[in-house]
Image (cartoon, rainbow, N blue to C red; front, side):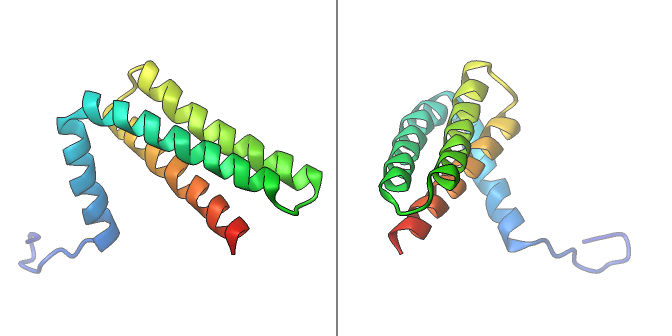
Length: 107
């Protein structure tokens, strides 16, 4: 409730993000370890699908650059022990981007 007595509605995606982040923060060391393995595998699958695709070479290399950057950014954030929120957001960005690359090249 807000000061005016009305309910404060939050975005459902924001609530999901908040709940997932709280769970991630509770077991950060374990989740970060599992996430490095998972998102690295997803990134390598995205790179494979991308290089097997029919895009021209310049577009392939640009997308491959971003796939690599997102994967390395999360891995570096975990190794540098950045704040949990920054690490978690990088994980989400990496997984979403790599999944979109895979889906767009499969369809």
